[in-house]
Length: 343
Image (cartoon, rainbow, N blue to C red; front, side, top):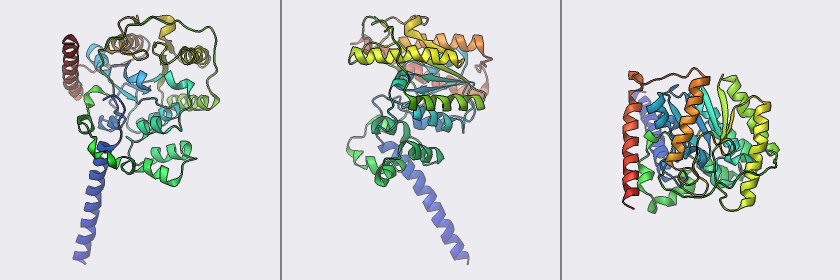
């Protein structure tokens, strides 16, 4: 009897250790985004209920909002749960997942992909979903967005290692070393000078399928007593003017949608209130650099402080790790500026 119990216990321990190791290996091997800010998975490294502000959205989110500045200058904690081309449906499910562990006072929703129903496209779906553990949220996502997938396709989302096991010969340093101290954000000091292309004078409706997820996000925030804020970062033409104009036309409609539903919406390209300089504050034709991100972050921080009872955690021993992370972030900033100065 004792041998049987020991055998069962040993098997359980083996399975547990195997799953832990397999999970770690899967995270190393999975395909990352084009930027080190691909850190959806590191949501789980945060202390429970430690975040005041949660940012959701695409790469325009992680290049336009800087948690370390929000911490150092205002004492507010935040996390950027963004991913490249993040589908609005995934923003909803990632919010739902985050609320299992966090209770932010504010949720920021970056709006660049509100024009595109890309929830069933493999690349943006994987970049947002592969970093999540095998849990209820992942099952819900695949039941919703993976209805047309074969069982083999679904299985590769449940167990990403099946998709990425052949990456062993292309692994890079960032596959092994995640910069958790960036809190999901990016640091880019490249400068891409350009002119403000202006705004179209027409509106384009938000796709009906996406309005459904906007409603779900609003409902989830209301149920959890969270202030929802939309924001559209400035951006240039990008690939072609037609796509640019359609994106901004959707923002024109979104402005009306937010007014109707009493949701704050910062349409920065229209109002210019963050002071973004098209000659200095972009890293490419559509994304802000670190200087632009600092301007957006400070503008939003002032709004948080003026309109909500936001805490200042600086000096609180329970948040001392945020000071340590800021020092690491500052080292990255110094290195980036030095590299830029040296050409």
